[in-house]
Image 1 (tube, helix red, strand yellow):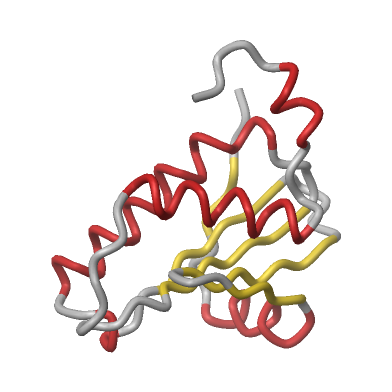
Image 2 (cartoon, rainbow, N blue to C red):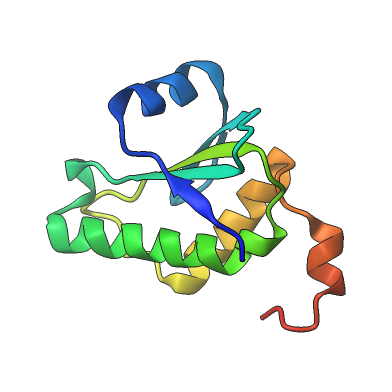
Length: 124
């Protein structure tokens, strides 16, 4: 079983923002920091500019669910923060949109194990 810790404290987020790298997509912004000895850690951010709480929480759930889907193919030792870029006036991204973009961002960041993905019989 793979376990990813949750980022909860503001100083953890600030540390990744200042010291990590960032990768931009249409709906998501990925901040990534290498060197987490205890496995991976994940933080998800959706500001009030994204919309009301229902929309923000839906987007955060979509990101977490997609992360869970890819979790076994993600290399260990990273801290990730996914920031929602979608604004109120933009269309609501769906599961598939987030899925494709998250995989693309993780590949660009070098955190996704493409070989393990291709060898897996149960990928979608």
